[in-house]
Length: 238
Figure 1 (cartoon, rainbow, N blue to C red):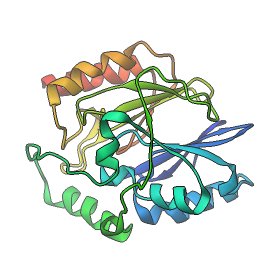
Figure 2: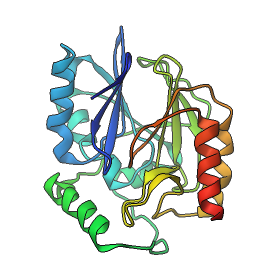
Figure 3: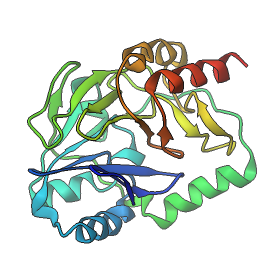
Figure 4: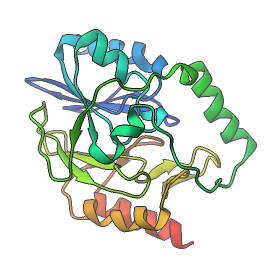
């Protein structure tokens, strides 16, 4: 799905991943669920591109619903997988700490887990090899993505800012659709390791220039990062 000239999305408001499309190739941000592999291939084909045009995959954090097809992309296409050093172990299959269970409504929660089953969530493979990255890195990938550390949801959660795409990709640093309540609008994401730290980390993106704020779950936020951050903090205070 085309969002803008250099910006495409695969998946939906339940689980999404993104493509930065540049003259020198494609950077994929997050890998969703294993079953979204076909959507990746279809989106590339719609652009007249193929797997050989994908130069790198950046994972915003190491949770299973963000690394779905990462290992397949790495092994079948030789695409390097970039993960913050603090989440490298999680992406390679390490344990995720238990978090406080969020509020739940049956319909949205069932839809989230049912979608995961349809998209092969139980077949998610850990990433066998990662390239560790850090806050402030500008990667030599299409779109010149800059890494912004946003610890809280996980120790190595990041945002990815691409001026070419006019976008900041935030993973689960915030959400615009709560996966267990169905509530829409910018708000804190559930299943967060350190909620207060995650809120504080939003300062790191508030001053960025971008037309899109793109979460791993929920509709794209077509507006400034500052407006998204303000909405999250208002939701958290409500």
